[in-house]
Image: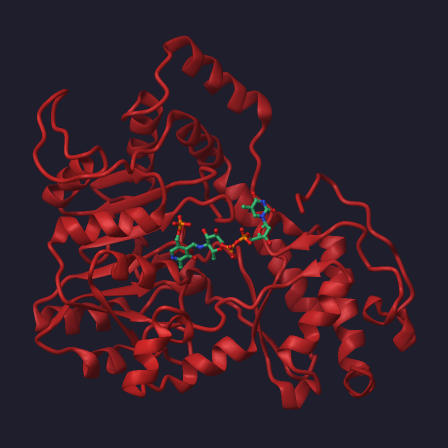
Length: 407
Ligand code: T4K
């Protein structure tokens, strides 16, 4: 259901079990609160760019707004090459082609399923690895799975927190294979002295509407490798280097001018977006402080995290409620929390069959998939709504035993 503008919500008492929507009371919110609500730039700013597009009648194919956004992103991220695409999933495909990757590719199972699917569709074999306690690809586990068949490692900066970039780079250098980062969540983040975007052979950002910085749909590859960037520019446009000169096999992975305009508008206000998201995250930190069994993931200040995701770990025995029971309580109140990533890549078709055949065991990934819950973050909730969501969760925690009995 679409989420429509500033949101009416009901104030309701929370003193008895019957006050919960799960047991028949009216919901806390009159309309859904999702985990994401896309940043929408000022219409007048977007419209002015659209007027130019209409004037030019140049809608796609490496137009001036795409070129401008690439220049600005390259500056902002301090990386020599920024190549825009239609989305991050296809961008990964172009990078795999551009680097000539074959065989097996190591990746975390605890990430969005698009990566494993894209590798499979390209004829590569995804090899799922374990994450560390920080939910990020574990270099030691990764090292143990490298074989002569390994063609590359694709590591995700999950929830915008940087991977152990030095550790992963060292093991990829030793194996002589490229390291690619899925930076879909990590726009604006930092690792040591650099912004995310100039590490490994390439980093890939998603500019999907649900991301901290977005272009409605879109992908961005950043790299220090000029040859790779040139190949990506060819392959995103059917392999054309001139109007009728084809250099190689390619597909249509271009970004349109309309999407680039949205990206330009959102880049202008990214720091405000980030500051608002940080305030929302802090609201949850205060509101959930001291609730036994709920741990909010709090990024370290030096990460410069975009704070777009509000990630909780639910400890069922300490809370007295399972993650999924809490999810049901919240959903009934129109708070559509999400179980990202569930059930994990190695347990999702078509990859599950290989997991079962090989007896692959990733206990830490399974544990995260079973206990992580995302709450409405960024601009998906207003500060007063965060306070109400936290009150609801505290009430559910206090009533855990009774809720469990009644479920
Ligand atoms: N790597 C990682 C680590 C990723 O997270 C992703 C994408 C990718 C790679 C691939 O990037 P892209 O190829 O997409 O560029 C969503 C997004 O579709 C997907 O882009 C994203 N990750 C993933 C984590 O989430 P869904 O199916 O779970 O999201 P969806 O459509 O249910 O949206 C989430 C919530 O946002 C909804 O509950 C409603 C709300 N929403 C959504 C849209 C699109 C709105 O309020 N307005 C909107 O316009 O996949």
